[in-house]
Image (cartoon, rainbow, N blue to C red):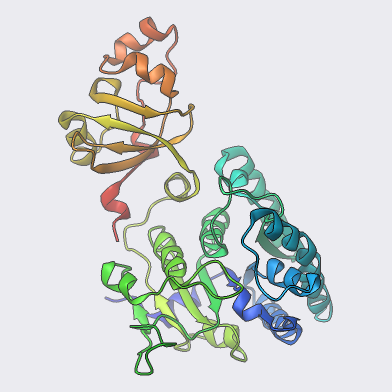
Length: 380
C-alpha cells in the first residue's frame, strides 16, 4: 500500500525546516515580515508538540545589502567577508522574531569537518538535543566565514539533509521560492506542471530539475532533489514547497497537498551508514578482485586484504574510500580500518599475516560490512 502524505505527517515529531535565500531576502535586504511569519508558525507547531530545527541561508545575501554591493562576488574571501557581515543581521532578525513570540533561538554554525569526525558529529548532536530539550529553536547555517572548498557542504540543501540524519528527524521541509518540483522549468515553460508526489528520485525525475542557481543562492532544484534522495535512503520523507506562501508550515503539517512530497525508501540505511555515505568525504580508492566483489555484493561479507589488488590515494584509518571492481566500476563506499600506507604492505595477504607484516593488527577486516554501503543501495 502506498504511503499517504497525511498519515506520514501525523507521525512526525521532529522536523528540519530549510529556508533558502530566495525566500528570506528581497532587493533591499532581509524580508523581516516573512521571518516574523515563519517564527510565528514555528512556535505554533512547537506548541502542538513538534520539535523544529531551522537550517537558514541568508547570511551572504544580508551581507550584500550591508556592504552596499549590487551583485554577489565570486571570490571566496569576499563571500566569507559578506557572510561575516550578514550573519549577525540574520540571527538578530530571528532572535527578535522569536522573542516577539516568547521563544528563544540559538545559533549553530557548522563546517563539514564538524560532521566528518565522529566525535565532533556526536558533540554537535548532543548540543542540538540539549537545545531542543530546553525548548530553544536551533538555527543552523554553514560557517561560511571559515569555510573552504575542501570543508564546505556545497549548499544548505546538502547541509539540511545531513542535519536530518544528525538529529534523527522525521521530515525535511525545504522552503524555496517556487511551489515545488515541476516537470520542466516553470520560468521558461508556462505549461510546466507541478509534480505533487515523487515515489523515487530516479533519472527521470532528475531530468525534470534544473541546475540554475538563483541570484542569492548556491543550489538549484538539482541540489534539493539530491537532499530529498539522500534522506529518503534513510527512510525519511521530504517536502519542497513555496516558503513565501502564507501559513505554509501550518498547511504542510496539517497534511494539505502543498508542494512536492517525496516518499521515503522502504529499505532504509541506518544512521551510521548514512553518515559514511553522505557526510564523510572519500579520500581514496581500493580496487578489488572478482572474488572479493562477489563476497561483498552477493554474500554480504566484509572486505579482507586478500581481495585487494590496488590502493590509490592517501587516507588514514577511519576515512571513507571508494571501492571499485577490476573494471574500475564503483561497487561501494566504506570506512577503512587501516591507512593507505599500511594497506599497500598487506595487499593480497591473508588475515592471519597482517600482524606479521605490520607488527600489529587493528582488525581482521579492511572494511567491515557494517561500515560498507553498496552502490546499488545509493542508485537513483
